[in-house]
Amino acid sequence: MNRKRLHPATFILLSLVVIVLAFVGCEGDQGPAGPSGLNPDSPPIITAIVAAPDSVGTGESTVLFVSAYDPNGDPMTYQWTAASGTLSSPTAAVTNYTPPSGIGLYEISVTVTDNDGSVSGIVRVGVNTYVPSVTPSFLGDNANRCSHCHQAKVEGWESTHHAEAYASLVASGAENNPYCLQCHTTGWDDIVAFDGTVITPGVDNAGYDDFPNVNLRNVTCEACHGPMGPDFSSHEPDIELVVTGETCNRCHSQYEEYETSGHGQAIEVAGGIEEFNTEFNRSSCNFCHISEGFIKKWDPDWADRAVPAEGYQVSCATCHDVHSLDEENNPAYLRGLDAFPIVYAGPDHPDTLWIPDEEQGYLSFGKGQQCAQCHHARRNEANIIGQINNGSAHPGPHGSCQADMAIGRGSYEIAGYTYNRESVHQPDVEIGEASLENMCVTCHVHTIPGDTPGHDYHGHSFAPQVQACNQCHATPNDFDYRGRRTEIQNLMNQLLSMLPNDGTEPLFTATETTREQREAAYAWFFVNNEGSMGVHNYTYALSLLNNAIDYLTPGQPLLQEQRRMASRK
Image (cartoon, rainbow, N blue to C red):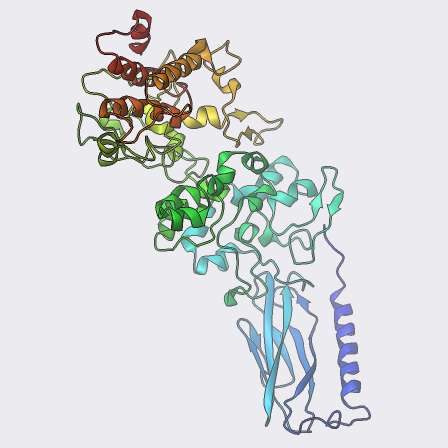
């Protein structure tokens, strides 16, 4: 909300009163030399620095005055310095100052010197704004401030919805609605209810609620990275380089749902940064379990930066790069949409590296490609064959190998058996007019239409929604479609009972199992670690388990129904 400001003439009057009082204080009973009993080598003392007025319009000037005295009565000299604008008498106690024409706050320093030393102070002047009582303060004007070092970022931002946030209010006639302005402008820190009532007042830091500076319209750099005033050129105070989910939460309610997701505990589920970096010696965990690690991998501007010892939790900015927007192909600002490699190992196809791309007949995961960068098995052939030959204390793929399961590859595959890979959930498999073009996103980030255009709800707990299934499957009210998850679980239990086990999972050490048992057990760990129990690729999960069971019972063919199900496309 706009706070009332004094007329410039009132500023001048008040400033003159301050100046007069300063002189009275300096030349009272003590005389010009100031109080007695001070160190004879004392430097000057500044009693006041005044800009009268401290707020001017474009092209206007103000008067700067410094009041100072020297305890010893020594002569003093003055030096005014301004990073921009012009000073008429920079070596006098009083000078005219004409700031630049751009809206914002401008800082001028003055140094008073005598034979024994010097002392400095600052004063600020606002152009078409006012001087706030709190620093750091907001300046706005990305093009003339941030872009002098970050031109590419600013140009990318200009193509985003953030750069058009205020314009969207104008289009809907809501440009004067405080409830809307708090998310469509920069620096607005009053918390406003839907009816316009201020619930929690913010501070006086020159945000749009304090003064409607046109340079603070839209969601600018400072909205996320923090205020850079009063003097942006000094880079003080330091702006926030990496924004957290709390930053986005002010306007994007998805964050509250995200906090309940596995992504919201990505560091903890991996044991903590110290554990996976030091104890486990697995710095590669950073790429998926720390926000800066994922950004470093996919943002060229971060390629040479070290991941900090205390990293941020995976959150909004990890997945969404809000500095650029490809409206046609990437409207959600997603990072990491490149192809990724999938390894699948076994005697029938040794040394095989399978990279999904259009030339090889696979259309990738669409928007879900980003999910695949972390949700895959992380096992090369040497690792898989090594587990089979030698056993392992950590058998099977890395947890959450959903991308591998979805495309029907990634597990150890026993020689001589057929593995069905195709699934109706793959984007290049069409059922009627339907296909999952964006794979993971279609079901796990299900969109619920909002009450008004532009306010759809995009689920960020990433838990699948039955409503998403109903887009293709009209009847299910749970995820056990036609009993298929139950079937996979029963096969898991059957396979477990055929293997040496601890009651929970198969054993996998070289001393407790045979090689054949480990070949079969790898299928159990692959399906278990993937977690969907056949939802992501029913036919591949069924092939893995049925073939493993058959492999452990030579001469005993699969039941006819099992073979029929295993061959379904």
